[in-house]
Length: 311
Image 1 (cartoon, rainbow, N blue to C red):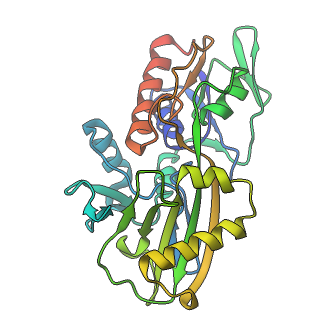
Image 2 (tube, rainbow, N blue to C red; image 1 turned 90 degrees about the horizontal axis):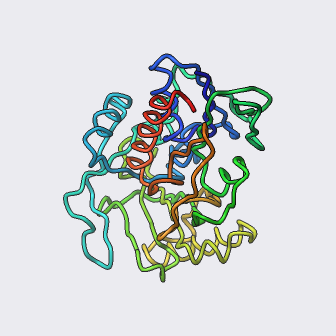
């Protein structure tokens, strides 16, 4: 079979690998220059910072085994606590990251696959018994893009699965980290600083006597400022962090802001309508947004494609 996979996020790459290993021709289309989707990392000065997924869990035994096989000695654990309302959050939970950046997971999964980066697919069109993607014909098409984007690709109603935006700020401070905690979390939705994590808790990431923090704003805050000038919300989030964590504005170094329009699947999302034969969805259009959940969905969709012969 010839299968197109749209989106080189974790679920799409897992699905593509399973299909390729089974002997089928798979072509992955990715509109950006990077791999791994929201498992995103970037350089901030001399540091490597996760600007998307901060850490992930591996509760599912099948996914755990596969991640360990793919990541090898890149897979590391965070041992310091996360605090929520002054209490340790899920004490004893294992939290994982990749040594050289969580985006490394996408790069490792893509090995051996044909991936066309910086190629945006506008629509998927039925041509006889095949599907046309970017001028080429395929027996089946898998989209791992968030549902609002997949809906446009497949010509369906876009409002069935809601996605929440997120504004992320990465901030360097020219002072050493005190090593007391990894992160603080607010799940109420009332506090603009929904997540603050210190990247120094990931060994080897931060260089010199400096500290780097990642803020992920609440959904309400992100919706309010989504279309605003990034300089406005980046400054505001920086000031909120400094008040909360006792950091000096005078010691603020490099900063970076990123706008995730489709950061995570919304709570209470509806079930999707049936798809036309030969079209498939994986990722958080059909699961929650945790890494292990979207990984599992990639496995399951590949199994469906193989069971149905692509149709």
